[in-house]
Image (cartoon, rainbow over all chains, first blue to last red; front, side, top):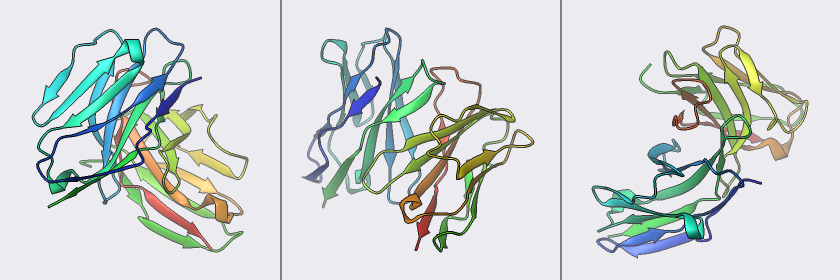
Length: 115
Length: 116
């Protein structure tokens, strides 16, 4: 079965600290896609990144970076020098390619960045 | 429009009533998805449209839930005989092609449904 686990329910950091959000996934597929979404208080899910299972190269985009490790089935997300505007709920998701390509989401991690 | 639009943003209804939630996807997007997000949880898939047809409705919890997309654009999620357990945020998303595995979906701001 497809499953995504985000073990951290809530994280609080002080501005400028680095923070890593963990994501562990389960899938029987050899080809799969992983996503991260940000959900600010407004409620809209904002797409951050998509990664396919063939590309294990880590990615950096500004203060954001992602560490994809197939050996541990993890796709962790790091925010460097966090800012108050980063406060949101962050979701990791797995695309279920066997069932209509719908997204299977983790429960989310609430990130609170204090000034 | 510029993004996925959902109306109303909030809906309060009495138990047993019928409600309709509307989704206006990004222009030209052929795929449309409905998800439900309960408090403290991640979104859960309900139904997926490719064009006018429901390609996958396996996530609909029971026959009180129904969705349509008659012209392949706007979609309406319909809930009959609402129950308090239906209270949640209903999210709509659209994507530019069919179920291409790599295509990301763009989400609306959701409709917060409260059944009292």
